[in-house]
Structure formats: structure tokens, C-alpha cells
Image (cartoon, rainbow, N blue to C red):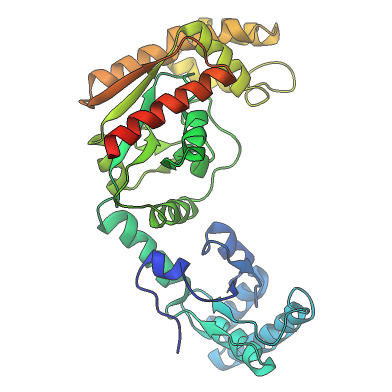
Length: 351
């Protein structure tokens, strides 16, 4: 009987030795069940070819050609990545909607003697469970915001809080973006993949304990936070981290090293700030970058761009401030001490 989980938690706790995604590589790349391995039974080109034959010539011919391709690709997988597996192996196989591709591959595996099963509804079922978790239900745990102006090491502090047993979700890590105009860290995941990662993190939360997330707008780069989380964040109390401009500038130089400096010594992403700050300011900032004056640049960005924008945002919000945690330094020892203090605040809140 096909596996038919009713929640993300049920799916992630599936009692199988492996999860196999037999969809095409492009389907897998856009999003997939966490931990699933890609063993496509049709390549992107093969899938397009079979689909064209189905529409333009004959469903029967398409199925016959598709069956031959599936068998050929299945043989490659069995002789390759699956070659050394023992007889008691129990995989879970899924395709787009639990139909021919996963059924065909699972049948072949079953004939070998492996205890293969399929997912009722395939990837579409997984996607439905993710959407229900993110869009149809309230966020499953109380939220505490970690707030503070740019350069207060909030993302670094999240990792240190996690090492101290605090529940955290690193939204910027999931989104592969630092959340600011200069925060790109490379390609971001697709929205579906971001939502899968977020739903997976949410499924692991203890609903009786608070979870700490960094204060964000409704978008991180081009990715949109689902309403259940963003509404919980808007209603959440905040722990605000404060530090002097000099300490924040020094931390930014450390944190952004190699991230925003282009090979010619210019920070090309500063061009994104021209509509907000004007050509004269951005030209001056790029000159600082060319001259290697990164501390000066960080101070300028903090005082002339980031802090004024934070002030405007805060003036429009009514976030309750739980406490302020101030520090004079954001070096390694300073961040360790900050994490201890914040963890103590959260422990007192949850206790």
C-alpha cells in the first residue's frame, strides 16, 4: 500500500532506509523531499520527448517509448549507485504525483527483492503538506525576535544560541542571503525549496519552547516569508542587541570579507544604493573600497544608510522590546558573552 503521510512530520519520520526522487533533474533541482536522492528514470530531454509524442502522436506510443527509457535508466541506477545494497533494503520512491514513473521503478526494485514503496500523490503530496504547514496553520511555537542594527552579529549569535540548546531558525541561512541590499551570497533557492527547508525546520520544533529568529522584513532577497511565520514575527517580543558604531564596523569588515569585494577592488553591489543614496555618495564609497578603506566604508554605510533605514522601519512598527543587551565589543569573546546573556534571558522567559 502506498505511503500516505498526513503531515510534514509524518513524512520526515517515514520508516524507510532511503527516499528516492525519480523525477527529472530539473524537477529535483527546484525542490525535493529533504534527504531524497535523485535517481531520475527520465532525463529532462526524455521527459519532454515522451510528452510531445503523447500529445502529438499517440498515448500508446508514448507509454511504450517511456517504458523502454525507464527500464534502461533503472538498469543504470541498479548497476551504479544501488549496486552494493543488501536484500533487506527498504526504499521509498516518489515522482510528480505518484504515478507511472515511481510505480515502474518501485516495481523493478521489488522484483529484485527490495521492499520498495511509493508515495501516494508523489511530490504533489509533499508540496501540499508543506503549504498546509506554512499557509494554513498558525506557527507552531512562540517566537522571540533577535533584533539590532546592521553589524550587531545577529546571525552569528543565532548559531551560538543553538549551540547552547536554544531553539533557533536561521532564516537568512535558509534563504542564502544576508537580508540587505548588499547581502547576496550567491544564487538563492527556489521559493518552493526555501519553503521545504522552512517547513522542515518547523517540524522539528518543540511547541512548548520559544524559537528565536532574526528580525526580518517580509522578504529575504527575492524570497517571501509565509504569512504564518511573518505574522508571528510581527507579534513577537524582541531582544535588541546594541553596540557602538566602531564595534559594528569592525564586525562587518570581518563578516563581509570576500563577499562584496569584486576582483578589481570595487564593490559593485554598492550600485544598488544609487537610487537611495545618490551618485556622489556611492562614488565616494566605491573609492573607499578601491583604496582598501573597508572600516571607513563600513562606518559610512552604518551611519548614512543602514541606521537611518532601521529607524524609519522601527517608527512604523509596534514591536515589544523584551530587553536590550548592550556590548562594547563584537569580537569572538564579546559574541560568546552576548550569547550567554541572551540565552539566560530566553531561559528566564521560557521558565
